[in-house]
Image (cartoon, rainbow, N blue to C red; front, side):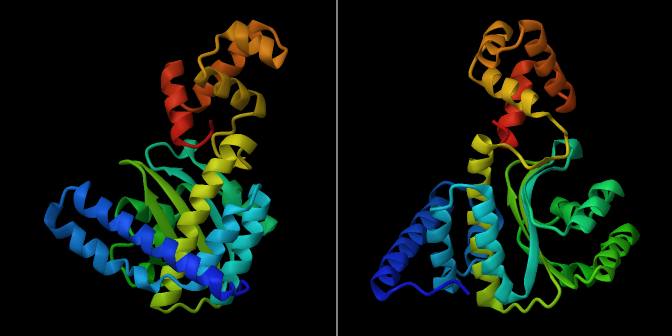
Length: 286
């Protein structure tokens, strides 16, 4: 577990927690339309009083992290006491899986190669469930769900065959097809209500931090496969630069700059530069 803060720090953490809760409650009641009693369901399912001091301490330490590697190491340490030993954090586009990006992938190399090489990324039941579930869910809840298809059950059995018996998926809805996702995996996960709330809190904080850092430091893994030069070119396009200006900044010819931009457009499956920039921004690439 993360070292407990001193009493003075604990008071400060609690103050910020109460402030955040008040802001979120105000947002829920004043900004979001009350469709079908959604407010009551949201507030009853998200018990803010369950947010532990460990989660608040994690957020404080996370604020000081200046790299994705530091975020990875901190989160891995934080989730270990709950029985989770690996995780992934990224952005999923259900309408176009090739636009999926992974900010942090803390998987064993053997499983990483199998997951990406076998095409399991395109039939992952966790990702498929994002179409139906907007709130955090456990693998064990999926196993008991009759709506899970044969392919989904086979994938869950495959996960278990590799020694992972439980997982926690924390989706962050962005629009109809795009979701942020933090997926925790463990061999001996133990969760009660308070632990689950704390893990969800830490997962949301990790996602937001990783997304901000990745826009400055690059994406460790992109399913779309954009090269570093294509990313550099798209960042400059987002700032309004022309091919000639991009070439001058990157010290390449305008023709080569144009090829990088066109390559990025093609891989992102967009028709125009403005659309490519919009997609890249939504994915946290620029």
